[in-house]
Length: 195
Image (cartoon, rainbow, N blue to C red):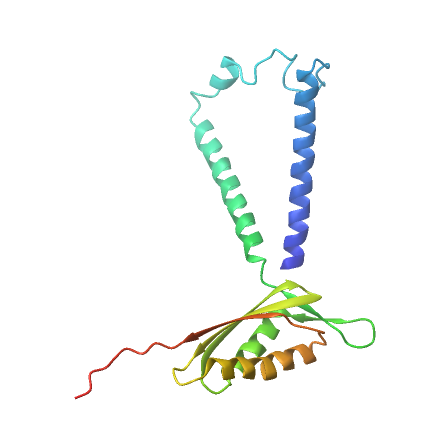
């Protein structure tokens, strides 16, 4: 999905940039007194953007305003989709694994996240673990959240995580380092009345 999104981003930004460059350059040139191009919608620099006739041309047609609103709604939805897709991209989708032959291989980021989370959850006293990979595929970074049982020492849980789960992930992916931000939280139990 990230390769498709990358291509869509580049194409959209390229087309939008080209359109804005052509329109903006034409407006600037005509505004400075250059002759208007043949495709330009106005005749000279004193022409208004929308005349009264242009603004009221389709006012009485029943199809005009629903069409304009539908097109604008579609454009807003496409812009929102594009924005959310770009904001969600922060998660690393693939990790470049050093195979030792100079070529390398790609490992799905979710697979590495799931393995890290399951190994962290297997530690004593860890109730739940959530892992998210960020950074670049050649230099990934991990964000780990651990939900600890009340009796667990946070220092021990952190040492177990770095010494086992993170070390295994780093070695298996052939990474020189795997910078990690770990957040620890304890399970909160409700007080119960004892009789």
